[in-house]
Amino acid sequence: MIALDLITEDIPPLKHTDTGEVALRWMEEFKVNHLAVLKGENFVGLVSEDDLLDKNDLSKTLDTLFDHLPRPYVLGDRHIYEVLGLASNDHLTLVPVLDEKEHFLGSINIVHLIQRIADTGSIKEAGGIIILEMNETDYSLAHIAQIIESENARILSTFITSPVNTKKLQLTLKINRIDLGRIIRALERYDYSIKASFQRNSHHEDLQDRYDELMKYLNI
Image (cartoon, rainbow, N blue to C red; front, side, top):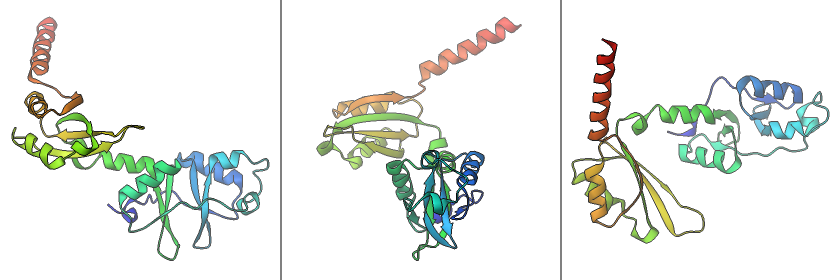
């Protein structure tokens, strides 16, 4: 997915002649802490709720309240990862999207973006999750995938994090199996460290079945 495909149509930009009061009212209405500000078709910058609350007289226009505004944005052809990276680095609730001439194309609501990600791909597919911890030099997704596939399973998605002040990394794997016991044992045979796992095994399902039968009996 690219930025142009992720634009939220229902959040309009502010004009530079709008007042601070209007900006705060729109932020409350659209449940965001940032809004794009335009002068004509050109992107002036991004105004935040915190910046507005620092001002004494919000009846003034935005171009009077601010000599300049920060200008974080992504181009329309940028990948979703760049959108998420910018939002994370600058703590944004809204990411403006511009064309190559810096004309405003729209904004991406980060909450809506996260919801869209959650509704697509492997997140909704049934499966278990394993988190491995390893040294950076030991990371080989090809080898890990080979081990998992040898147990007649496959990786649906991966996610890597690097804890601060360490050369270790944590690899999160979403796997298309609910019972992860055999896969975990196979990884451990190759000396992979299992940091955590999230699964429903056959023992859990058996207990659930027995509980359901007991409830049915008690309701008779």
